[in-house]
Image (cartoon, rainbow, N blue to C red; front, top):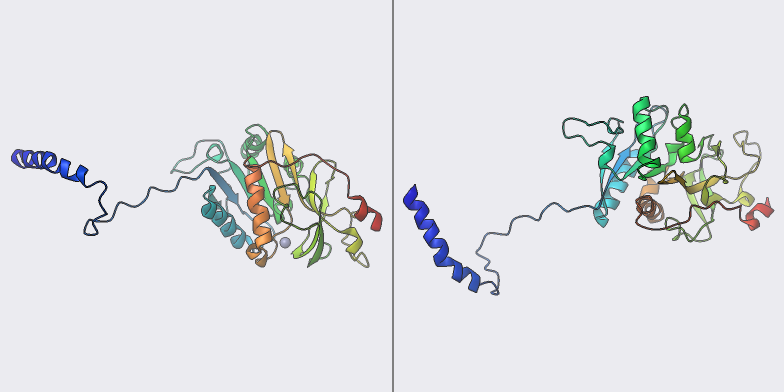
Length: 294
Ligand SMILES: [Zn+2]
């Protein structure tokens, strides 16, 4: 073995000047290809949860794939997609599983019912947002979950109370065109989607970004309408302690996740909760024009 080592050591010094001299030469196509690139380094880590204990949306997979791809294509984040809640904890996990300390934002994609979270997990999740200043994005049925967990409603802004018009051509007003997640929407537009009516919700506690145009809604023979103020928010943002929170009811259908407007909204919303952009969290009254018309 020893003589062979001496030979290779000797060859190294023989060929070194030749290799160095060839640094500026064209690549020799007879050489083997370079090693594959290192794994792309993503700036942020996102945990996407879609556990369902109630209604199960067909669009869940579409939403999760969209969020994954938005991060991969931009290089801004990688996403861990889970339909269970095991990772929602700050306790150390085994088998290479990451806990909340690893992640920068949490996204609930159309979760429904009472999720599998014990008191310790609930405390860790709230601390993740409130104390650690990490982000939270709620997609559609993220408002239709955790009814027995008061802090959850406080964090996200309320709970689901019916969708009075089911899936329909929703007339939507853009209330804060300066906010990054809705900047690309016109002042008024229509989207075919299922708009939730929130309860235990008040615009005094959130910054309403999008809302239904109350002057263009049908109120006749609809016992599912409970809000006498006809204030139906479609998207809002808020702070929860140090953490940024964004919620939108848009995204019920599978088709919504192919809609560039909806994808752009959630892309910018995720960037905002991650602190990559700035947007107001101040509350504001209803736009006078729409409030006067109904
Ligand atoms: Zn729905």
